[in-house]
Length: 110
Image (cartoon, rainbow, N blue to C red; front, side, top):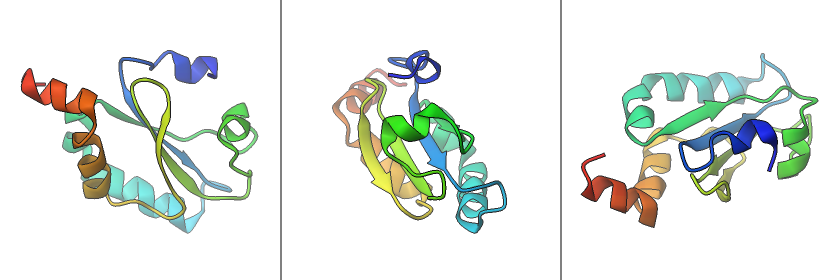
């Protein structure tokens, strides 16, 4: 795993958002959805990351520099879900809340 991503392993879940450039409509929409749902992201230790177009993270996840993708990565560092268009936070939260690790966290009141 890429060093920049490895530092988050076992601490945070990641939503890695790939886009061709900063003006991409899908990227703008995804950022808006994330901003509107910050408390839910924080509650689930979910951190959005926006790698630049020439970043090695693109290669690691097989995403072309001209493509949009939102990839949910668990605390264990593995890909959990991949979306080709902006994903609603409620969908992310539903998937995360169904994960065994998150269920244990909720049992501890996290």
